[in-house]
Length: 346
Image 1 (tube, helix red, strand yellow):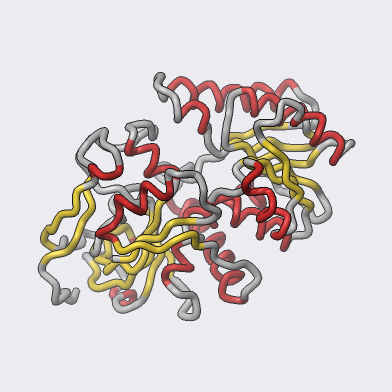
Image 2: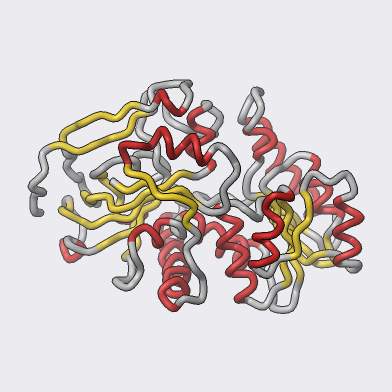
């Protein structure tokens, strides 16, 4: 174990149910890694829908206030705890943290950390950590989509959507992207056929584009959109629900919508011959099948990093802010006017 020269670090704290300006910029002692942990000097972190939901107390399983947000990070390893590979010291890692990444230094778990290729800049790598794993696994593990097939993607202008589009086109898929009309021109330029997710005639529009049905739908809205998505499937198709924005954005109980969505997916898969539905959970197996979780994380994020390093996919950075300006960055991210991810740079 080696020590960092810094004794204190910046940490952003979400103190409670506050507006973005209520975020607190604090200075705290640099933490020390425990067993199977690493101390990382953070080089890039970012803002996703998860942090926006946590600010409103609407993210299932979030910790009690106050806490430091930050779902993922990229940084350089400064020291290693007991039973951690000291060969990682000095190298850059990408880590899924769920919380705690909005800081100058962070203690992370070895098993949730993947080495970042030297040729990939930290801010670009940050855009594809959670988003890239999610997109890759939904395409290739959940939907098992094949070249030449057609998919319908809700949230096409979002962080996950932007990476999924690139991976899908690289895989030889036709992409129909559902988003607000203000994002349609950018989607066309990316090679996507855009549709308005709020169009009352959305079903007819999609059926005109794919008369035989779509082979997979990636749904981040839930509720009635999931039902519509299932009806738009071709024989053998799959609906992958990866968020329930419609429910999370409300005010009711958070547990029941998730239970309902998971149960509904299981029931439809049993009752509908050849078509199926699934609820994608990035953290599935993290606690009870850790070795398998790690293998998939390493393989899938590694593949995404390779594609990024080769220039096959590109990082979509909407804006960069210093970590100390997290409030302004969060306000911009919540404006829903962006196409890409907002990056925080400690």
